[in-house]
Image 1: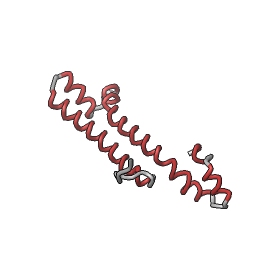
Image 2: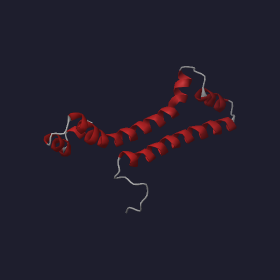
Image 3: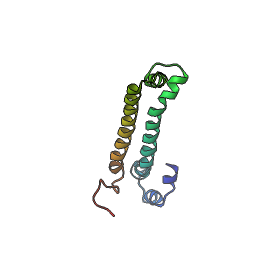
Image 4: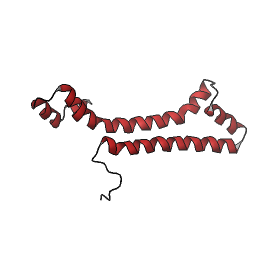
Amino acid sequence: MLDELGREHVEVARARGVAGRSVVRRHVLRNALGPIVTVGGTMLAGLLISTSIVETAFDVPGLGQLLVQSVSAKDFAVVQAITLLSVAAFVLVNLVVDLLAPLIDPRLSLGEGSS
């Protein structure tokens, strides 16, 4: 947000007399929201995956602890199922981020044959 506040088009909008809230909403937030959503989605996907470490460390029952117990017991079917669920959640979060990107920044397109 701070980088976008110093951009030339924001200064021009302020010089033209556009209200401060309108400048932030239309010029600053719109340009800063793309990287925020991308990084936030990647962090959320990483948090979903790293729950197994937290559950194991704090002895909280859940999928992470079940995964660790299944690996110890060599129960490969459960390990495969939990891995599949984790990968599906990761892919789903990344898909949502990729679908939101063109809505946030109209310069991005959903496959209109750009070079």
